[in-house]
Length: 159
Image 1 (cartoon, one colour):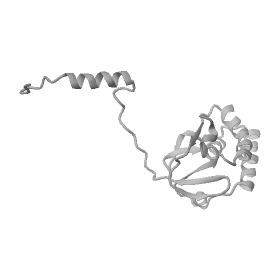
Image 2 (spheres, one colour; image 1 turned 90 degrees about the vertical axis):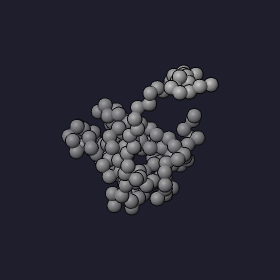
Image 3 (cartoon, one colour; image 1 turned 45 degrees about the vertical axis):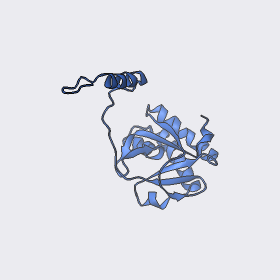
Image 4 (cartoon, one colour; image 1 turned 90 degrees about the horizontal axis):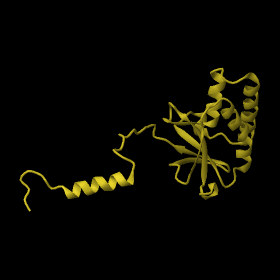
C-alpha cells in the first residue's frame, strides 16, 4: 500500500517510554543518544537545530508538556514539510545504528489533541504480552484442525 492511503505516520524505536509503555518517538530517541553521550558534539548540535525548528513550527500538545501518557503522530495529508525537516534526525539515528520504524495507521487510538500537522492519542500504559502461538503457518493450522476433527478416540465414545 502507498503511504498516502494512511492518515497518520509515526517514527518510533524499539525502546519503551516508561510513562506510556509505548515505543519512544524520534525526538525522545535522539535526546536519549545525546544524554547518554553517544552522539558526537557536532551531531548533537545538528539535532538541537532540528529540535529548535520543530519547537518553532510544530505546536507542542499540552498533554506532552504535562508528560501525560500520549503518543504523537504526524498527519500524512499535510506533513510533507515536517517529514522533510525530520530526515536529518533519521540520518542521525542511522549514523549511530539506532533502529527505528515508520509506522503508518488509520487507527492510532483515542485522539486527545489535534492540530494542522499532528495528533496525540491516549495510551493506557498497559503492555500486553501474549504467549507464543504453537505455529504461524496456515498449513500447520489446517493440519491441527484436521487432526482434531479426525480423532474421536476418547474413552467411552461410541458411534
